[in-house]
Length: 369
Image (cartoon, rainbow, N blue to C red; front, side):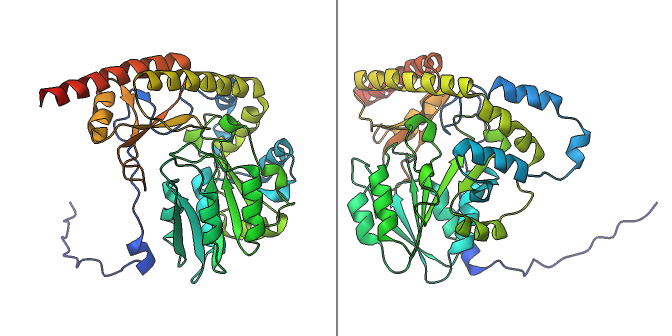
């Protein structure tokens, strides 16, 4: 029998780059997520049945081969009215953002960011040597167009705008986005259209016409493919050529690539799910108004709600009732506010019942104090 030798090792002396040490950490609250998941703006029901059929036909042998994204990028390009060289599939929209920032941001550059917005813009930008310049929205959380224009400088290299935006649900207009691109020809204008299907307005048709416009999309929301991690960047061929140098050639896996074409083809399912969410959103807005809660108008599949100082306890009570919602109080200008994803009408009836019960509990506790 071989004896084991115990070796005393000194603590590691290798340290990461200073930028990495200073990065803002992000810890998604994904643990113990049983119940109705209204906290991550996912499709709350299912992906297309056609996607499930394809998954059932994938052979074990097909998993031995490296994924080939180019044929699927060509299909996606046709679907979007673009050419293949204008489209790059990514491992979720997170990789799209990360790669874009790594491609264009360097020391002395500025990322211009209206806030509150998607957290990962700041996380990924903080790994570069660029400076992050934020523009705070007013209390109505509408897109701060004029203040953003005023913040553009010669050092602005990327302007990242989520439209519709999370957590507010507000959107920039097409005219505003075009004007921003015109006023900053030296910068990339990234328009993140993750919630496009619930909004119905896009600027992706301007790819190649507006020379500094890049659009990001995800298949994690309306399409219900969050677990497969699929996103894309679309932009002028000249800019996408540089993005592809940074993008990993195999970051999109074979299962995702196999499932994307049938997801795109099944427009009937997508249209049904979107219409169901929009109907549920209208009903939920009525219920929030009846409960006397302040809410912000939303163009997406979620609504931001004012809960106040009891926001953390509200989230806990909702979880206890089997409904997960997202506390956004740490976002700039969002203290006391909670974001609630909108699912189907049946799901939202359950959410409304839990919400009213939670509010009644909070009121009773306050009266008892």
